[in-house]
Amino acid sequence: MSGAKVVSDAPEAARELAERVGCAKSVVFFGGAGVSTASGIPDFRSEDGLYHQKFKYPPEEMLSHEFYLTHAEEFFDFYRTRMIALGAKPNQAHHKLAELEREGKLAAVVTQNIDGLHQAAGSKRVFELHGSVHRNICQRCGHVYPAEWIMGTTGIPHCEKCGGRIKPDVVLYGESLDEKTLAGAAEAIQSCDMLIIGGTSLVVYPAAGLVRYFQGDDLVIVNRLPTPQDSAADLVCACDIAKAFAF
Ligand SMILES: [Zn+2]
Image (cartoon, rainbow, N blue to C red; front, side, top):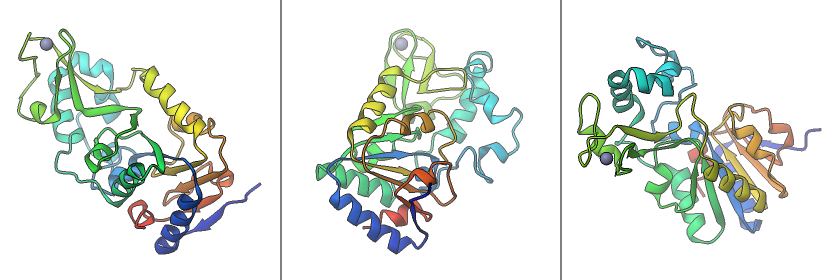
């Protein structure tokens, strides 16, 4: 059964989105890599993304906990050059979502991105399912270092206070998601009456599973390409995410 209205014209999508958000009591946004690519951050899975570039090791391997432990220097080299993107700026989607939260319309952002751009735009309640490059934690004393500090180090960074090993607060392959974050995201999705899913194909765990918590009455998907959930949506905006949030 397919009841979704599909809009591919960006200005029309923005008008439609504005109207629906206006009618909603409580909105939650669930975002994937597409939200960040609109800010120039490469998508790990897209055609020109990291997985299609040539590295000495496959990116999946370099982004694994095992690699972090056994090839720490190469891991941090990859982390500094490919994962931390300090020059990236929030786009219109980030800005609009922050504005909607300030207005009391948006309850939470759930994101699969690790770039901190939602917070940079002013969002406060953000569930970062895969962590953030902006927190790098000493495994011995717990001191937290910002991404800028990591960028100022070379080789394997060590804690300035105790010499301990630093671990980015990013969920690597082979690691499980933070349970508190996951539970908070599920609760937020369960409690809202409008869920906007943006910039994700919804095929990657845990996106598909979390969407099942939604019990509200307006499900909107903003993604340039079709997703497996399109038929369950009320509105599908098949356009650029930043343009869809230009309202
Ligand atoms: Zn330490």
